[in-house]
Image (cartoon, rainbow, N blue to C red):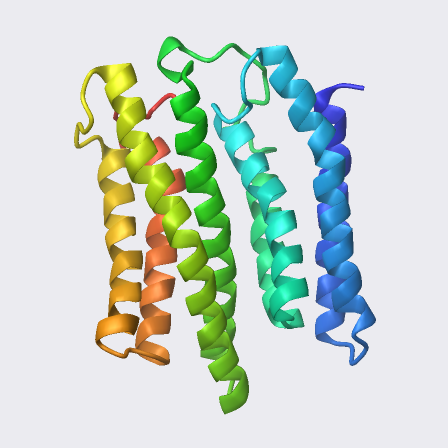
Length: 263
């Protein structure tokens, strides 16, 4: 079996998890939301051999192309959603938005614009500083997906108690994800840039938009700590930060030319 076989099977399981999570929205039985989380977790386990086979074949950690990036994000997300479900008892709406977002990431790997071919990374990518840079940034971004899901549910909910829970969940997920994103996107990224291009910072579009995204998430935490922002104002800030993250992840690669254009 090839890596693509495992990716294809796991994507089918992601879709099953998504369908079950949709059913859970219209059912009063908790079994559907629980099942959707566990099916999503199975998708992550099934995808794992694909990641390993791909890494072995290319001789490097499989995170150097858009195909590998979106599938890796989805893979990480399966475990993060399970973690939040077990620790924070996230509700079925948050589960649905999270699974839908992760499935959308994975679906992009099937786009005609995204090649699934395995090729050795270019010299600039052949560094384990890159592995730390990308993997830590992606871990942070997966937690930001949870924050986006809870922020979205906050906005559409009319129940004050649910709103408060969603506000707290948004805060907790950003609080966990922010240090990972800081280490990966900025610190390890700067070290890798020095190793690859001879300088820590180049004002490359990807670097610049990552920094802008970082400022918005830092602003969110700053407003919570020092300005006591809670509720709608901080929720909107979290959503704007997530939109910037998505633009940095996808838009920069296809709309702006820079040192990261090969990604």
